[in-house]
Image (cartoon, rainbow, N blue to C red; front, side, top):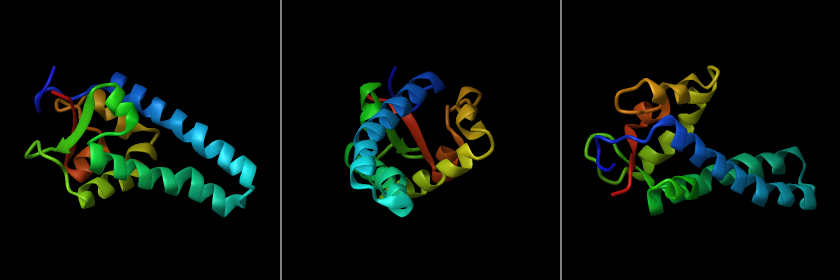
Length: 131
């Protein structure tokens, strides 16, 4: 599958998310344990730093390591091109909207014809298979 008509479904996206979360746990977990940074430091190392790295990966490579593993990339929903940094930052911030109501925004991928989660709709992005 390839192109804008072939959005990546919930299974591969969940797998990509799990790989990325594992990577964060493997890197941030020991750093937090060894440095004993306290609650503020743990939030920085466990949430803020991974969010910044995620947006960087999206902007630089079009995907996180997990999405790359599944041959997926993030594109602008209208043009199919590379999304702007501002759009990607909005996508990251909008993860909260997808997660807070019992992760319904992520589950939306399974029923949406374009396979967009709520954070994709908010930010104007799509996740497609790499050509």
